[in-house]
Image 1 (cartoon, rainbow over the protein chains, first blue to last red):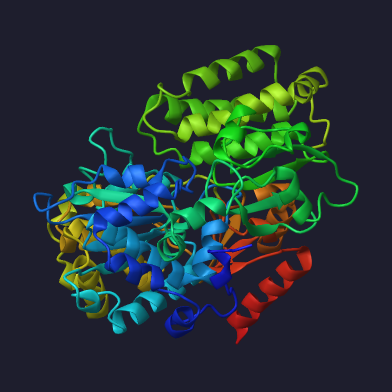
Image 2 (tube, rainbow over the protein chains, first blue to last red):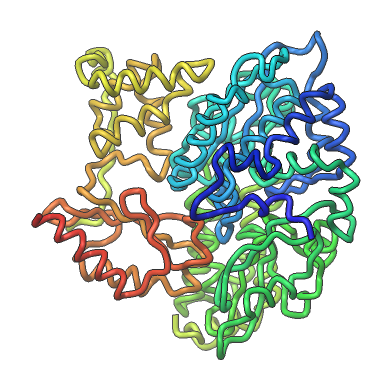
Length: 422
Length: 181
């Protein structure tokens, strides 16, 4: 099958500009340059590409809110969200380290489609190797005249800059990311206005995830029909799926959208010897737990929602029978409590409170009332009660964990300790 | 050693007396000016500027903070709000080497606590502290994106993956050899 993303991937020695071009690189961008920006938008809309950052919003629709035409504001921005910090997720790092030119080309296509003249890669600070390789790719593209003024003799000009952040999960939220890029404390912004209209420095701005952008060169080169047919289901294209936890070979694979979770688990060689699967998170720390009985679910947005979770980043985390579910949930909640920006009360106070209760339960000091308090907290931190999606994201593994591993919680309370010896 | 983290206090009056040219080197100034040129506003270079100065001086002192704020035309408190927001900006002195050990979920599932305890015992410090000889600072870090090769840490910006006690000991020995050599 076609692998429009990983066909360019070389983690040890990524393709330079010439090698990338020899294998078909930058053909998508050249195709786009010969089209009107709105035509590029239409092709991406027709492809049914959905955002790969976690929310799964249609990329073409997201773009369609950007003011276009001669009356549109002069400065517009495209930003690549490469602030990959979702625990258990490492797919964007893989793409940037292994195929830096693929991302640069994807960004050039997106920037052209929305009429942006400046683009930024917002990269997490810990990804040093990505930074080096991306900067090399940018320099090469600039030297070859693919970036800069009057690209390929057209009227179109684009500058592309790498912004290296310094480590904070909330910067992955697109309005917080925009504040961070402006040199402000990275609290999320109120919506509306949406970034497509009032974004970076008050200008129309599109923020797209790294993997989303990497899909664009193939769509432009081979067409939306080809892209839709890559998968057998309702969600188009391929996806970088992956798995971590106590499996034999954790890793990432580019597979047709809608591959089952069981297939991904099998690709990893399944659970390590003497371990049994107890539960799994489909796409990062902020997705609801699912059980072994859900393994035949297709990893696509609607199918995962139907069984009570979210596709998220599509990189699974598995819980084995030797690790304590309460301990796992405590670890996840500690992360969210630390990374809360502190802007709204339910998140700032609710998450540390949940951590305190979970720690007590894990230490064998928990009571029946603590379980009720945790349930109540799930409500206090749910969608509509908070400023952004961080706290609701934290609630997902907590509420589903309390449902699926209720016996484990009860054992901690009844036996005043962790049955797994943590 | 105390586990208490000192509360940092910004003396606003000081900002007026710090001229960035008296504090920052020309190299730092040039690098920060370059970053400023990439954005519509000078403030936007704040995080870049903090990283540029930290690269030279290992951490961001109050003096550095005032100087950068002065150079970017922002208040020191505003810049402090940014500096303290990020995990990789150090507002206290750190050792010659900084270890960030990942404590997120995939590393937890690979029992990173064994690695954490071994580091604490070997270095005889707690997380957030620096060894008495000023050599190594030990810090926790959220998910480093090495989930397929857990447990992992970051040493002076370089990722070290698939950790076990043996690789950890080799790494520590390498660091102390560096001290003697």
